[in-house]
Image (tube, rainbow, N blue to C red; front, side):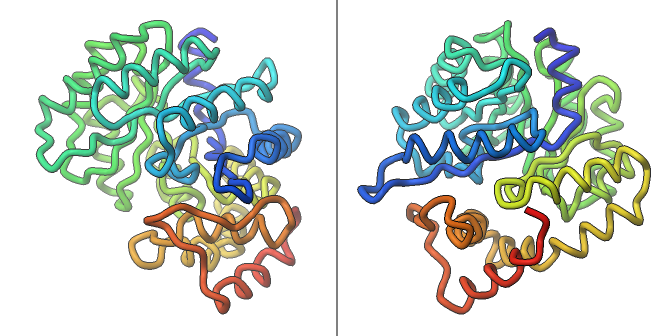
Length: 300
């Protein structure tokens, strides 16, 4: 895809597939492809393997490469694959180049994992990754409320292949200011806080949102997208009300159960095992029952 097409593909539900495990604890290859196929068959066209809901930080390098390769093997010709990369700079560059060689069209760069991140260093980190794969679209993942719009705009000036920003600070006013200071029209702005923040962020400039819930109920996430595109915020908020408790369970304890809730819902549907890797943990019995009850009435 050209960068313009990649940018347009981000203005959508950006699905973050889970990484299912087999009985021996390894990546369940066939199950992963089946879960991805379900998303694509429901109309999802943009996916991020190795995102947070895919347990990026719990996978080893070979497993992260495998997940990208499985995604490319299952993806349809029009699927936009935005592979997650990150960690130390050499590792991130190597992962970006692997994603390129595997056929992905873009990479999403997880926020730098470092106790000391300067604005200039943030630009340098992302520029090095973007420059290493000039053919790919690049999407920084911003979770730092202290990062202002200026460095993001500077990165866009230096790197034409930085096409979008995944913004995950739970403050719509802050998002509105950062997006405008960086360049509202320069980037495709994707809220990285899923369905609960999609209406608020959409109202001030986002045109896409990431989703882990889409693994469980693709029609529900796509229904919210349609409502937001139509400017029907009342309809979007009906979806918001439907998924609120599910997403609140994921957010408990500083998102300790973010992946566990999604995998529990998939396990209740018989689609994959509930297993997650430390430092995540499977849900206790009372939460398992509540998740199953919540999703039982959804249009799946």
